[in-house]
Image (cartoon, one colour):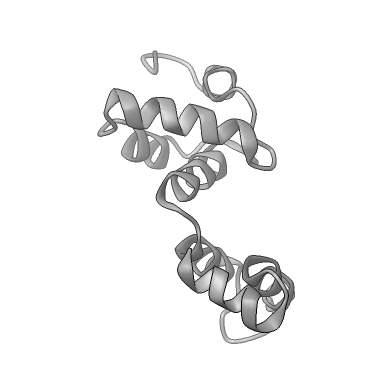
Length: 110
């Protein structure tokens, strides 16, 4: 958070937005995929936001990453779950976390 604040003070623009713009079209470079971009942006997010984006990435798209979703969720305390549900509402393509999980999965997720 402090790095983002210092960058904005010095350059007058949002660091997250700048990195997102600069790394958006790197598919033809040595990095070859969006993994580098996602890792870079993830490191600049606060932990609960990082978790919310990771959970969203397990749900959104073709199929569900069951292993990733289980790995991200099973160890959370009740407070961490509440914080995640709240933050998930605020991220792009977020919303009701319980509805998204229920809509994308079946079986023993409840």
